Length: 217
Image (tube, rainbow, N blue to C red; front, side):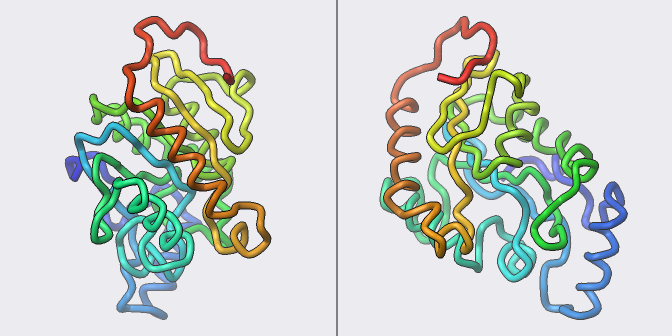
C-alpha cells in the first residue's frame, strides 16, 4: 500500500457536506467503513486506475476501493481476465479515487473534487513506475488530468480517448463501470475490456522522454 501519510485522516474535515453525510451514516450504519477510502493495490504499479468516489454500499461499506458493488464486480472481473488481479487483489495496478469520501447521489460538487485532488496528486507522484492511467468517467478524467499536470482544453473526455501528459504518462478514458452504465448499455464488458487491452499495449513500452504539451491522441 501507499504510505498512510498520503491519505486523509479518518475524520477528514475538508468537505463539510461529506463530513456531515459521514457522521449521519456512522449513526445509521455503524458496521460500515464510513470514512475516506484509501488507495488499493500495488505501490510499484505500472497501471493506475482513477475512479470517481466510494459507493454507499460498496467501498463506503467495505473500506476497499471498488469492493462490494456492481462497479467493482465488473472492474475486478476485467482485471482478472487480463492477469491484473488475483483473488480480488490488484497485480501491478493501483486503484485511486478522485474523491475519497461518499458524496450524496454519487455527485461531488466542484469544491469537494478540488479539496480532495491534493491526495490524488500526491499518491500519483508516489508511484515512480506508473506509466499508464485509466480514468473512469468524466470527473475522474478531469481530476487525473489536473493532478498529472495536463491541461483540460487539450484533453477532452471520450471513451477510449488517449491523452499524453507532460511527464510522458498516458491517460486513457473509459466510461465509468457503474451499475447504471452497465444496465443502460452505455458501457458493455467488451467496451471495458478494450480499455485495458489498450492500456496493456501501451504499458509494454516506455513512454517518450519528451512528450511536450498534453494532447488528445
